[in-house]
Image (cartoon, rainbow, N blue to C red; front, side, top):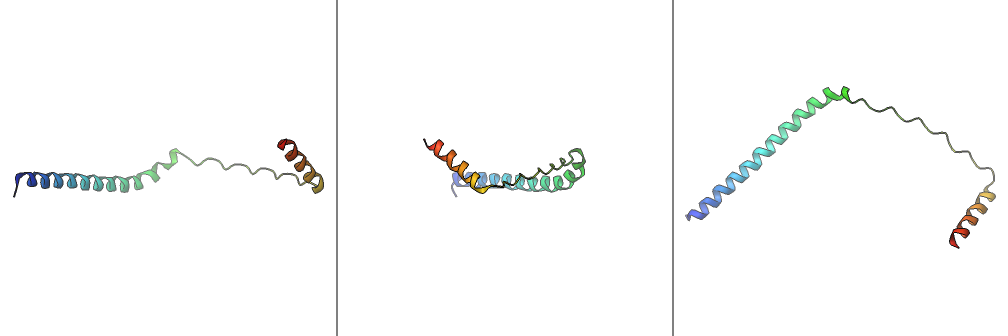
Length: 78
């Protein structure tokens, strides 16, 4: 075989081996962090839930609301 082809195959093998080793290392680190992070969760407690807001008061006069909305739209329109 040509020496250039052998060098190319060697370079390809080294590159693929490097990528494979990195992916294995990444999987190991992720698996370890899945065990470590829950043990450190006490350092960052969950925030207090927000108090529910009071519901908006219900309007009594629908006709007045509609007239007000129309007036605002017409004024904005020009």
